[in-house]
Every structure is written in structure tokens, then in C-alpha cells.
Image 1 (cartoon, rainbow, N blue to C red):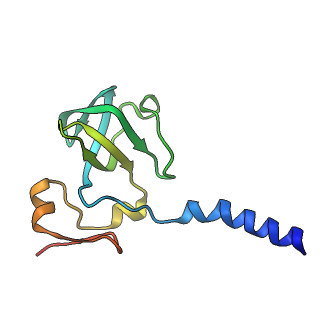
Image 2: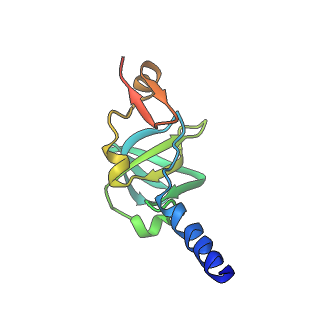
Length: 124
């Protein structure tokens, strides 16, 4: 019985994180990212730069190396550092991408209200 209980707990420990909802920061904006020549990228069709130490997380929330996503158009949530460089990037799952609306500009984020528990934005 103990072995069965341990096996079940181990299986749950492995399975649960894969289905856990990611929690995005309030200042995370949505955009389309194309990594062109790291640290250079295009964000919503405009030149952007990855910050030193930038973190890109894939749909499984694992760190993603820039070389494996070169020239791919990716729907992402992102934050920028004090210099306007991309600091945190999350490649969205289909379920995350379906959550609308999500602000694409700082101006939208300041006007809309955010429910961090449900991870949804509400327009005024």
C-alpha cells in the first residue's frame, strides 16, 4: 500500500505542474515576437532588443533558447526593463491566447482593470 501511495504522489507531482495556470504580471503586455538575430527581435513589427539576462518561457513554462525560435512569429506576453528592452517573455498556449482582451500598450493597461486571480482584463 505504501508503494502505491508513493507512486501516486510522484505521478501527481509530475502531472500537476503541467496543467497549472501560469500567473502573468500586471505589467505584462501582449504582442507578436520574432527573434531575428539575438539579441535583436521584432515586437509587433518594430525593432526590439532582448535585455541581458532576458528569460523566454515556452508553453510548458520552460526556458526557451533564442536559437530554437529564430524567425518564428510567436504570440507572447512580455515585460520590459527600465531601458525598454524585453526582460520576460512567455510564449502563449492556445488557452492563454484565447483570454481577451489583453492590453498591447501601456496606455491600455493603465485604463483597463486587471483581476490577477482570474488573470483577465476588463475594459472600462
